[in-house]
Image (cartoon, rainbow, N blue to C red):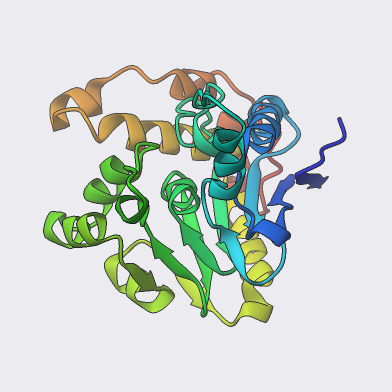
Length: 263
């Protein structure tokens, strides 16, 4: 399928998802949301790709969030009905809780509002040195309801999160790294190289084990420890009946790198 606002390509086991609206700082409007939802569903369901790298076109912004200019133009035409998001939420990702493949956000500039919410919904975050993060919704009379207020307050200390949420202030890539929101900060010209390095490290692991690990972490976070440990996880059952569960020990015994099948 051809996309107008997104570029989507697959190279080996890696899917590259790029928001391609640099003229609007990669902000999203309803057609872009729908395209991203289609892309994330394809990534989730394609057995040949095991990890995604998610970024924005250009060097200015990963995504400035909701396209307020587009919304204002709609409102100016008459009675306005808010546009519903696709089932996966903002960018097709903030409410997409059943994709157990890892997603790496390569943040190439501003990640604000919904853009930051998409970053918070990713698994690993690599940021260019000039990247900035924030939830400025209160400054325009809105609330970060696409997971922003919930995820940020779970991922960093509560008082720090409240300081960001209630003021709408931005933070630098270096501060985001210090808070644990970012895994690595690199010069902008090294951003995609670093993201690919992280993807390659993930690909050295069993894709079945990686997916099961992601499911168990994210599902178990909201459970008491005993319940989380003893819960039945779908991806773990898949892993235990896969070819890969035998390949790992066999490759170790034969002193060679495992050849993962992902099934």
